[in-house]
Amino acid sequence: MSTKNISYIAIISIMFILLTQGYLVYDYFQTVRFALIRESDAILKEAFRNELNQRNTYYVNSMQQDSIKFDRNDAAGENVMDFDMRKTGMDEESILNKLDIMLHVFLSELIPIDIQKIDSVTGQILINRNINSEYLIQLVNPKNNEVLASSKDLSGGSFFVIPSQLYPLDFEEKEALQLILINPFSEIMKRMGLMLFGSIIFSIISLLAFRFLIQTLAKQKKLVKFKNEFLSNIAHELKRPVASLIVNLDCLKEPDFYNNERMREMMLNNSLNSLTELNGTISMIVGLAKVEEGLLVLNKLPVNLVKLIEDLKNRFVSSPAKRVTLNMHFDSPEVIISADGLMLTQCFANLIDNSIKYSKQEVTIDISVLVHATTVELNFKDTGIGIPADKIDNIFEKYSRVDNNVKMNGFGIGLNYVKTIIEKHGGTIGVISELGVGSDFTIVLPKK
Ligand code: ADP
Image (cartoon, rainbow, N blue to C red; front, side, top):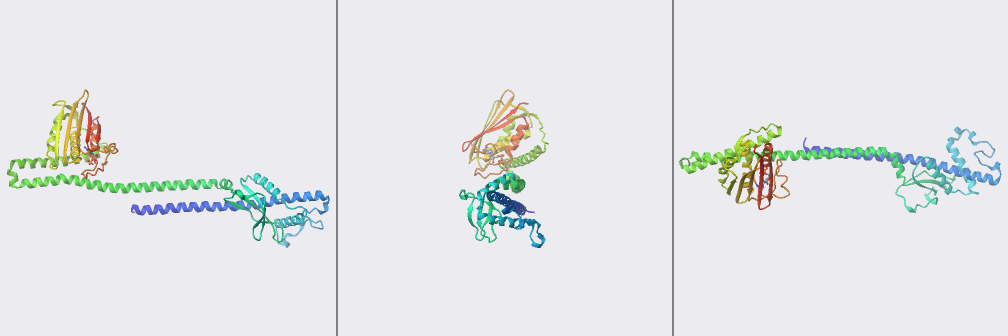
């Protein structure tokens, strides 16, 4: 399956997960809201009955007439609860409601309803039930929902309210009571907390997993692109010396060239250089692969660095495209250290090759070998295009190339190879460079 299709599937899956989570949270919120409405109904009823009883007691006390007391006994003094409820078709609660309404209608002529009292009783019930919310009690016209009286002023604003059902106060539907919970967020959070927390954590984990997947896919895509570029670069890098070899050998087949001693020598030299370059590139690729697998072994022998560098000179001064000047300075005609000569040659050749590659039409390269007590210091200084300061730290990394408008062959492993080999020898490499002025690579190697 292509990375594009995997991305689409991942996007659809994450959207489905987030939508499902959103729906579950909303559904649970509605359940909590309905539960709060049901509780508000019960609280309002309890508060109203409490206030009604207080009015009733007050009325009875003030009248000093027990006989008028309207305590759920009918006029004949029989308890209403003795009715056969199955005959009325009503349950006990609705009979009680009706009795409350009758008592209220009777009493309200003499002692009007006190919604402030209902408010304070409601507050107490809310505290007892551990419900944390602002609230108010209002008297409403059930026909048009007009608010007739309110226990508190809602001018402070309410972002979100949970109203109870209307509790009728008469049989003609003129007045009804209502409890309103104002901005009950903390109560809702308390009830939804665990579910919300779980849902948020699950969503975050899903989003992180999604991000990781997308990043991995992007990396993989980059890797495939990089692999293709790398292979085509390598192919190009290998083809170049082979092509030059073919041209030189082809010419040598011609008697005119072959019999001309100067031409013959030049072409043989060119062929040899092409083969050396080919060998160097292959050694570098193999060497780095070996380093990665931990299989690189140095074949250390006494090496004369002066001879090794002088031998390289011929290979580069004959560069056909540019004017190359190679200056050499050696502290001594023989600087012997214990090293892998073949690998060091490859490293130095790389540095010189880079100095020529990353320069304009003309370049001067100063190579010096300085002998210290226990180390040898080598400098490769050129008058090339230089390296930008912000890129200089990366140039020794594998596959790192500087985009410097100079389209050059290469695939960014040369300096990494040099650094790896020098460090394998127990040495160090560093560079100082100035854009437009040149670069100066310094290698320090132990003598032994
Ligand atoms: P490659 O030459 O294949 O790009 P290297 O690892 O040899 O890979 O070099 C990495 C980068 O460092 C090059 O792309 C080049 O931009 C920069 N560089 C290396 N040597 C020099 C130099 N002497 N002068 C300027 N830039 C250099």
